[in-house]
Length: 135
Image (cartoon, rainbow, N blue to C red; front, side, top):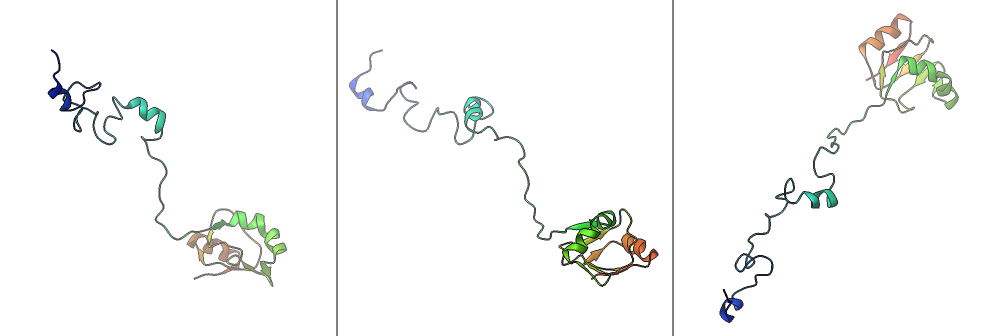
């Protein structure tokens, strides 16, 4: 069939037939439609990490920096050299620690200053005659 001048003026047809290229038709879906199918190659080239879970957002504003009794025993000399131990009082709060955990042992007679401590760590230290100042 020959196209008349009138039909030619009614809209383009390049590569899509006569009527399908006029509006929004035949473009493979809008937005991200078809990424799992006919737009798969585009996805592989331009957006490799489109699918899957990528990290998380922590909604917690508090940060705890704990220390165990074993770590305290190992770091005692370093804390003493840094000036966090004075008159048999270990100031773990000013050293940047926020919580004392019970794993391990600590047997040096002293007083420990820290914002939080677990019940088990308090019991362990009180058996050795060590007191804890906490909130």
